[in-house]
Length: 186
Image (tube, rainbow, N blue to C red; front, side, top):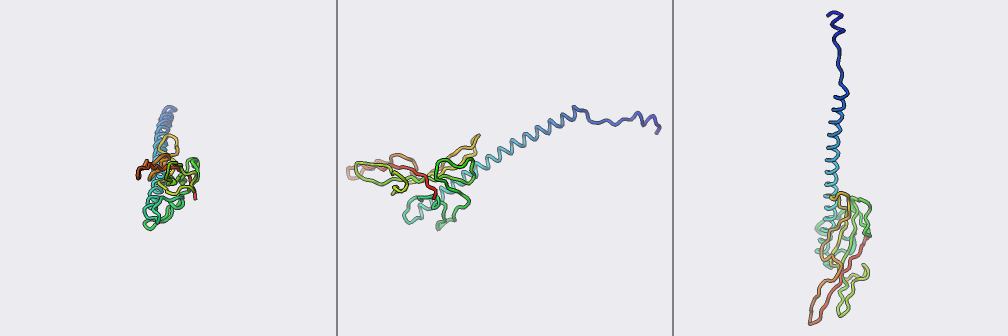
């Protein structure tokens, strides 16, 4: 090789346009990956929290079926406890209010619904949790991640709606039970 050939041969680098195109393509791929990951995480969280609430509802139903009084559990702790056919639920915290901790994956609210089973002409709903003599159902609150922004949702079992149940007619007398629901943590 002569000296002239060496000087004529130049190494070419990447142009600024080529570098910008590569950076833009990498940015687009990263954006797609992040959006996909966020959606997968939200769906997994939604499934997890709803399943947790569903497990508590199932356990409350098992307690109601196997319990000595055949009543719904009066506390969240009873609903989570072991029964003869299933183990206790662990890793779940029960709160005694409608407001769950912001976007909690392990916290639920637990409401007991029931009546006072009164007879006669005057029918009143139970004034508090202790006044419920006939538990009729439960409501479990949890965080639902399936919406654009997480929000609280509920699942229920039994007769878990505040209001009048009945009327029941017996011997010509009309009876009704007014159901009320109260939060309980212990």
